[in-house]
Length: 206
Image 1 (cartoon, rainbow, N blue to C red):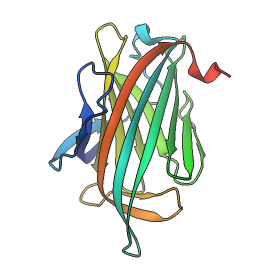
Image 2: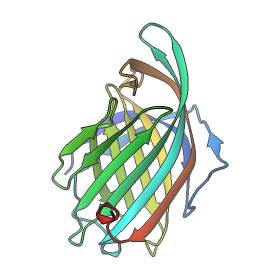
Image 3: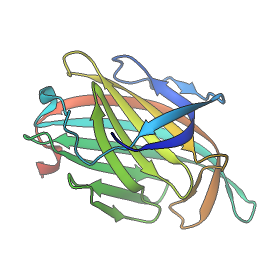
């Protein structure tokens, strides 16, 4: 049985059902719920065969208010793109790319669990797995974590997505930003979510 990690998750924004996007949704829920998250492996034994040799593309925007150690409050927007290619044997190849106002970073996760990070503030300890019709991708921060949850329709032709942030116990969510400084996150407004499925390996396209 997989190990469990306890996080207190705030549902900041979500697109549910089989919706491809919710560009008009700017939902910030401040109600905190406690969830048990099962550890995610780099490749899952239960990967749906309908997704073999297909790429899942997920994107969203984050408007974040955060506090530096000096007490300075900073606000800014970041756009994110998550690509997950399901190989012909069901192995998962994952890339999370984030673009800020002037800087960017990325993290590639191979099927054996290896992370290759590029750029300051790149997502740490990226993991990906399937649970039924859901793809779960998470990355840890210095304190807390982000979880991306894609739910597929019965034919696996489309998907909806939820982006959630979890606190580690009672600690504030803390991370290193693209400017290299450490920040405590005060709030995050997620918007513009989209999720789609396409045939083939997006990483092989030149």
